[in-house]
Length: 190
Image 1 (tube, rainbow, N blue to C red):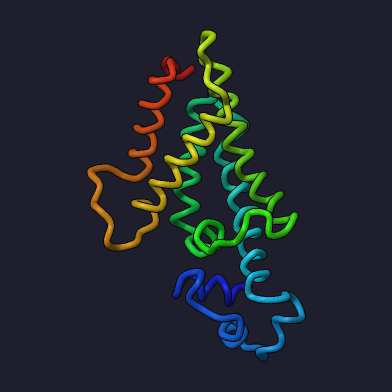
Image 2: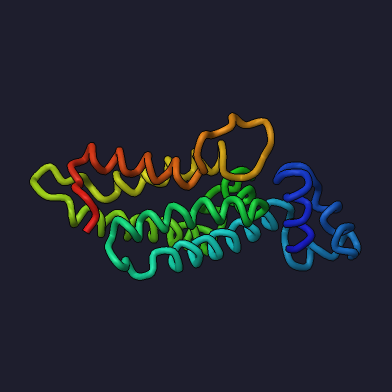
């Protein structure tokens, strides 16, 4: 597993072979087959572990919605960006390795748990939006996820060749979510 993470960090999720992972781990080319059917199964396990760590990070950021849902949602967004920046190999395995989200039941459960944190935060925020025009929580979760993922992919992972920003990725996400929530009729935090 560690060899795969190291190779993903160096070469990207598609830049190495199963045999190369074995070599990097210092084991025989046949050794990984005792644990994984093939490279795809290895990548699915790396992605699963990434989603587990990601869900843990988002849960810590949520802090049970304290002191209010909007502040906690902002922390979840910052937690998303921090994970992408601090765990680039896991992030690449999760989102860039073309591993189907349902490759294994465990991977599906881990991915659902991570998205469930975003959805729970969205539900809490939506509950505070007045009126009959309250948006569906799933829509809010998907939009915030899309913003966070886009910002992480474009600006938040320390990769070269990206457009310079006049603010931090975290501030860009905060501003985007603020504008979005105001457009939905969400008033100030509280």
